[in-house]
Image (cartoon, rainbow, N blue to C red; front, side, top):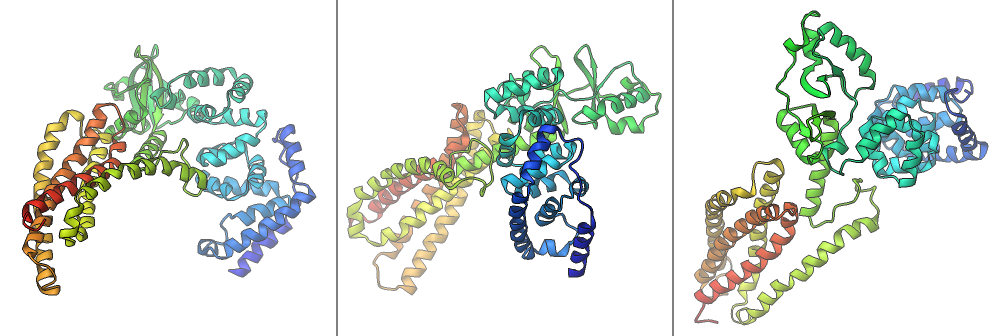
Length: 523
């Protein structure tokens, strides 16, 4: 393997110094010349040495000497092999190239990005994290930014512009082509998180009068600028009349009229529909693209499956954060890509609320302080009781949040959920109560024999308390998310954080009330 690596290095070293590619704009060329001077080259060599140390510990790199790595990429910069760099990056999958670019520091990433072919750079850019893209955008000149916007799909371009300062957006739109400017303005005016903000107007239009041969010719003409060519749309006077897949076109006779094979039973969404609803509809119908119409029924664009997946990922991440008592981030970032301060800021507010709300649990235990003195063994069962009840509440709340998100459960199903969870919780509570009662009886009758009186009493208190606590937890965990949805709040907020606090306090009240009844002569 070492021989192969040396061979690769010799081959690359044998390449002559290559000039900067001719298609790089003059303004960008000047920046590259400055960033690739002798002083910068020395810094690059240090970066290469550090990268080689990291790669020496990477088994994947060792197993594939042909893999394009961080050190290999930087070596081509040092040796000024810019054409070679373009060739090897063209062979990479856009997602893999984006991951590799993110491994580079901010300056080197910008230099490499400027050297890439425009098409390659644009595809890789779409797969980068928000943080890496922001770094590039902040360093771009207006010329580079406009060029990137023109090359990107319109929905991706609109998403990028939404997060940029108004002044920058204005400059970019002024310098963009008229067609791009009009399309972006339309997308930017739709409400955030709506279908309109997510869609793209770049799709293949076909006419009812066409036959299969003419339709395929139209796809060839429009396909280069379309978001997808797998699903094509038959449009008449801006009204969607039908859809036809590329598969159906390829398998049909060339002279077959389009109306004979198109599907005129079209499912659409409105521009004002919530993007999560759109993503769920696409999941429901197994669509790879969803047509979008305006309030007057005019066909205005499509939403593709890659955007729908992003929406579902973002929404599920937000729900998980809320269920874990973490404030959702304003932007989707990775764990390591989020600063320590941001992590702390997201977690502290909810933890403060929950910490203060736990005061109720403390008040309950204080109220029953005499029971601790008379029956100290009661204290040892409290953590088990609260944890079990909390876990039961979290189980059903998770199911409810998921069911509400997928449309499987609605607030109107309140009574159905109540009836079902009463039966489920009764079975679960009976089993858990019986097992714990038996455990306590055996443990304090045989293992710790003689240490405590009335062992059967303790077993009964814990078993009965656990039975009713499980029922209570299941009902609270099932009802709170439904109530939140009914009131227009996010059901995930009513999941783990609030349920645990409520169930803990209520479980302790039940526990001590039952203990007072069973041990009324000892308290």
